[in-house]
Image (cartoon, rainbow over all chains, first blue to last red; front, top):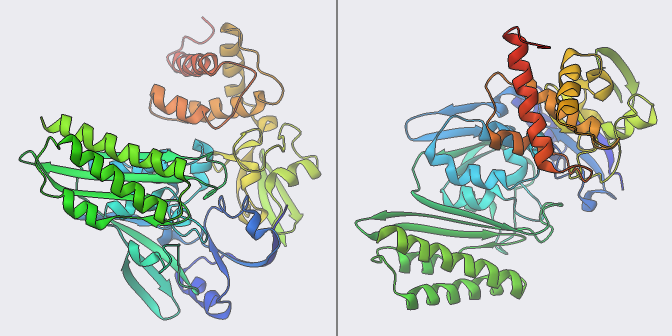
Length: 280
Length: 162
């Protein structure tokens, strides 16, 4: 079913985009439109679209010693094509799970992050990597933790009247990371879930670990992460089992179907077992 | 809305609904018979075109993003020397694709030929995954993709046709 579009603005500057958004606060910002076009939720609505793909600033990539800034309209393949930057490994692995090469040519990082009804697969990776985002609106710009894009109900919550300007990823290596995506992979958010785990080891102990699961909701058990941090490796089998149990509980509590919840909890346990093997 | 874009080297001007998709426009106006409208989700790859030098699913390109774009379809590729190289590689390896997959796979192979650096096996597999081909084994297409690149290198080294 085709969507209905009332009005489309294709500004060439950030100022024009902000001016349009001020006049049309309900306008939907879009980049490559790869989430918008197949989504039946938009089919019956009369949409006003703000197409951001012509704005050069939103396609820029800037790197410093400590972080890399990715414009929201950088394509997923644009990120994947960046020369070897080990710190981006978890993000790149997550992006490779999205669509095909031709879809990733059009899909943008901003579009993946700013899902309205579910989280894209880049979100848990960026969340685990402690990325920050810059939002732009008529009131100006503001830097936020990527977690501020998650509402009280653990659903995506992009403030109306604003659009994503850029994503800042700290250039910090994660020696151990894994991305697991489960689901049919056709429609974004259509029961797709993505698990990202990143961890570092120092002196045979877990110095830091982040475990983030997204689908329709975001699941992150910080108590579990804190409990694991500082633990000596290899982990006792009982500890891995306890982590499996705790993460399973969090996933079920977030409304994940039992089968999927068990599968991701199994992945968490498998990662911890691998981590133990790597340290011994 | 009025849009202007380049299709296989020709300037095209048309009035469209902003929500139209390129795949539908090409079919409706009979501009490219090789573009097959199938899944509408960007997953089957049978509506493959080259948009501004990169492979893209025509069902995922809304009309309002076509402004000033350069689109190449299979009909445009047929007129290029790259097409002959691809045909030769397919013939050498006995690859016969069906009418649904052939245009898309050929366009992907043409994109591969445009790359400056020799693509790795993973690069080729990633690119070819854009077409969900059911008529030929993916390994056969992979073999042809590698062969096409060798043929191209041979051409530049003056060994074409030998």
